[in-house]
Image (tube, rainbow, N blue to C red):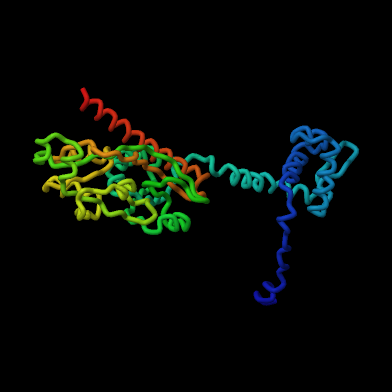
Length: 328
């Protein structure tokens, strides 16, 4: 007989209807094979003797075998039952592993996490976030993006994992977590002539302004939605492509830039800039984290979100300390 003939003679594997499988019966079978006693097996899994007998009857129909047969000394296992007993623990262990998979430690979790955030949030959050990830998730690679176009669709498609920015509410299928709330401030070069005057609405109105262009119509990349409704005295402000370039330009010119206060303080610590209060009323600036429901229950992603929130809290505390020191 040829190898081909042998192959053709091999019986096809029977199809099993898993939809009809009751996992509780396999738990009952495990107890029955361990105890070889209906009453004792029922006590182990919390079933009465009649209920356990019914489970055994269903198992016999499922496997087309008696599995356990009564003898003068009790129950004995059939040859098919012995085969099942040898494989059942491994099968149930695999099922249990699936059910507790999200609870496993993430110390060895290997993943690439893609986060969209404005450049100024990169400046504030990453110095606090990266050391935490090196400790808690050393094999996780964090990749940041500044392109906010289509952020919601990209989150839904799994192209990115998180977006950080001004997100007032989470659409259906998404989750949102507020990271911190900030106020707005004005940035001026340290030797700006206007600082020799009394600072107020009149001096503010006399200034030329720089504004940061929004990165997306969805709002994620906008530095300040609130400023879109503010009628700046300067009808033709200088449009700057990103928040990182704007303070550098302001430090070399007589321009005024309105930015979140924490960003202003960070920029003033690196450049010859002065931070001033905005002499007009503006609503607070809230920074939020948003993600798709696909990642919501994953243990690794839960860790990432917790560390992002901790980094944001460190940003808040650092600003509070700086404010207290400047007031002293």
